[in-house]
Length: 289
Image 1 (cartoon, rainbow, N blue to C red):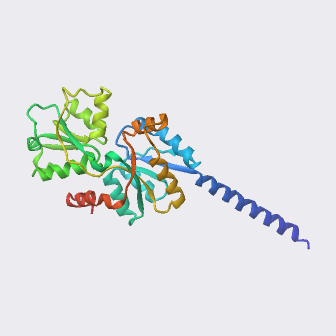
Image 2 (cartoon, rainbow, N blue to C red):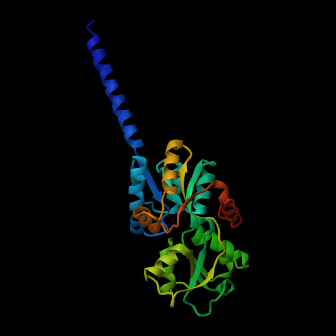
Image 3 (cartoon, helix red, strand yellow):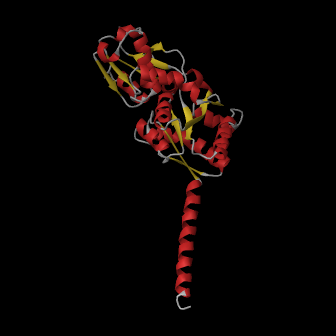
C-alpha cells in the first residue's frame, strides 16, 4: 500500500513519455521533406520550388520543407535512408537510387517533356561543328551523376566513336548546367554539354548570348527527370502527391505559374521500366557497377 503512490507516479511518467513520443512521431509524419538534384544553383532551385511546395502543402495538408543537398549522391542517400521523402531526380540519379535500394524507389510523375528529353552541345570555337570535331579539345560535362549533363552526352559521344577519356585533350566536370555554360562562355573549355531545358531558360532570360555561345549538336530524345519517393511511403500519400501533380493545368493562375517554373507543359505518370535504357547506357559506359 505504501509503494502504490510511487508506482502510480512512475506509471504516469511512463505514459507521459510515451504520449510525448507519439506526438513527436505524429508531428514528424506531418512534414514532407523534399529535395532535388543540384543541377542548378541552390537559390534557383528554391525559387522554382516555392510555389510548388505551397501547392503540395494545400493538397496534402502537410508542411512541405525543401532541403538543398550538396551533390547528386546526397540526394540518392537522403531518399534511400529515409531522411528525405520525395526527390526530383534525373534519369541516371533515379537509376542509382533504385539499384542501391534494391528496387525500393518509386518514380511518381515526370514532365511531359521528360519522355523525350535532350542534351545540347555548345561551343564558342569556330572550328567545332560536329561531335567528331571535339577530338583533341578541352570539354566540360556537368555533374558526374547528371543524366543530361554527363551520361547521355557521353553515350552519344561514344556512339560517334569518340571516347572523351582518350580522344579529348582534357575533360572536366562543372557540377551544374549553368556552370557548364559559364565555362564555355568564359573560354575555360572549348565545348560542353548540358540539358536543353536549362539552355533554353538561359537564352530566354538573356543570361547567355546564342550568337557567341552556339549549339552545334542536339541529341536524340531519352527519358529523364522524375519525382521519386521511397516504397515505404504510405500508398494514400503517394496517391495524393501523384494526383496533385496530375491536376496541375496551365488554365489556372496557380497551375500556370508552377508549370512555367518547372518548365513543364504538364505532369504525367511514369514508371521504373521507362528508365531501363538509361540503366543500360550507364552500365555500358562503366558508370554503374
